[in-house]
Length: 112
Image (cartoon, rainbow, N blue to C red; front, top):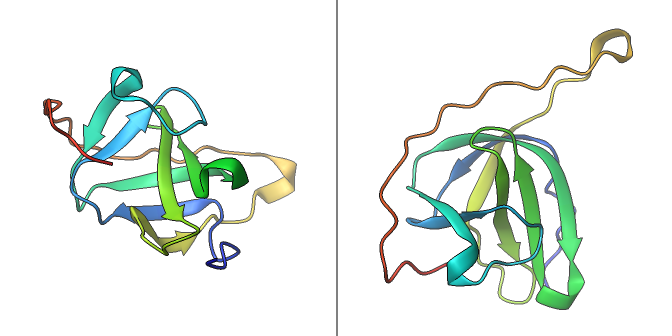
């Protein structure tokens, strides 16, 4: 198994062409995919969850809102790489950074 401790909130770059965005922390079925993100898209991951039963590390992103797979803990395959950790909040004030995302049409045969 792969060490998933390197993942945490922060700026990530999508490195898998056609990364699925879903509304649930669970790995989505095709019908639950909200959007497909192209490689090169930068997103802010706000929360990271280890889904042991699915061998995945999943990240909740703010814009577009939803969940993506970050890492397969069995194979080491990555959908997104962290570019910068989240900045510490000042005076216990949490500010959610904004992300820029390019919207694409969902392919019928998209693979996550």
